[in-house]
Image 1 (tube, rainbow, N blue to C red):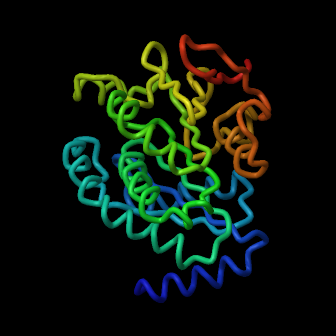
Image 2: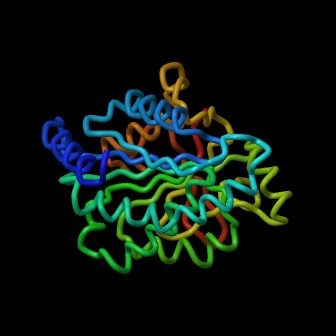
Amino acid sequence: MSSAEFFSTLRTDVSKAPTKSLLVFVHGFNVGFQDAARRTAQMAYDLGFKGIPVFFSWPSQDQLVSYMADEQAIVDTEPHLLQFLRDVLKQSGADNIYLIAHSMGTRGLTHALMALAQTDVKEVRRIKEVILAAPDIGAIEFNEQIAPALRTLGAPITLYASSNDRALAASKRLHGGARAGESGEHLIVTNGIETVDASDTDTDLIGHSYYGDRRSVLADMWYLINGQLPAAKRCCLQGKPSQDAPKYWVFVK
């Protein structure tokens, strides 16, 4: 479809949806187009999303051995993702927009949002939630550059981290530094972002655990999106103090 055809169809679908809402998913490393489509559909189903789900597929090589190639691909993708999100904001007709990115996809999404917060101040008010799942971003870059810029967006931001993420452990070794999706001593806890340590639960974003365990990440996202509830009011989360910083949250066992 051409861009004009796509957004015309999207506007029609949004207008007919029970809520004029849009869920946009940006996949991570080693994910092809079909898997990204399936994952988007599965999350929308598990979340009971009453709007229209869409996804942005960037050209991952869809191979474990192509990490470096995917890193370059997500950099090359950033201006295209920025334009896509700008078009979504201006042409979709959605009143409420929810953004979810996973792993390496969080790099493209956060950089695009940093730009939108400066250039599309009025339109970004319709972004109701930004969810960063297992972000494969350098912890220093996130704390010093990305987090301060995202705070100007004005939208709630939730970060899911885990100490059992072997992919991020490998990325940490490769880059020689902590990743934003780690927990433990490198857990990101900062003003304007609610951090959930998901180490003790299933963090499979495909979403099958939603049915069997309400403490799963997808169950938490259900309350987050459908109820627009902050962490303090969501089921099955417990606040934990952190030194010189806001609380972070863990799943109640």
